[in-house]
Length: 363
Image (cartoon, rainbow, N blue to C red):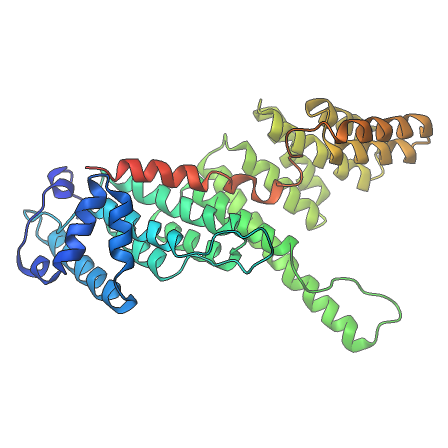
């Protein structure tokens, strides 16, 4: 049942199921909602895992009871409860120590936060918060290379918001990255034994299966938001990976036609150049590589691609000149080449999204 009354979110009562909630836990959630984030997170950090689980289960049960009885308010501010557990999850991860270390992916506290967010998804005034919560959680997972977790949380979000374009884009992006980083070999040499050739075919099939899943999510994102040009760039790239050059070219050309964003256009022209190069349309490839480099004159990927295409068309001197120019500018570059971060370009805003959700949780 959808509740439109804001007091459902704001009022604090102590009735029935709500009385079963740990009083200190209730107080910590209230503190977080008042902006006392540090003390609230530290307080919850002193709970054992078992105590946190019991307190959250009681809170969820009381909130569901309140949902069933529309005249009863929730036991505490649920947005603050969700963000309190998210922040504790983040606080319990080790800080980067300047060296390689295993990623600590969102765990038990993030799962508790997601259950609170799911409770908020059924109410008009908090649907937006819940939707963006799942997008932010998926983005954070992908940014931290926690790809199975990113896929898990985006799918949980899609159960609640099945036609949400940012969620569909996030789902496709996590799958595309997983496919691109796929560890199985797809190389088949003539001197391979039959066993190894079969293993290579299996690995290639699994990788392409991930790309096909990603393609479906990108197509869904475009249906949900026809103006989402980034989804068209991703669709073009995975179509190229699958050997579907015509589909790749169409998607990338539509991205170019529908966007004025320079970083996105840089990628679209770069990828279009590769599509044309693979089809032996070298003049078209050179033209798109030139456009890509013009959009970002310091881009190393575009410079190398253009130099290579010029070499293939026997324009050797210009090919060398492009590389020399790129090398001369390499030390002066202040921003990263957009190609380097293409796979996670949609996930860079995870921290900003959580910052906005924290602000919304204040009462």
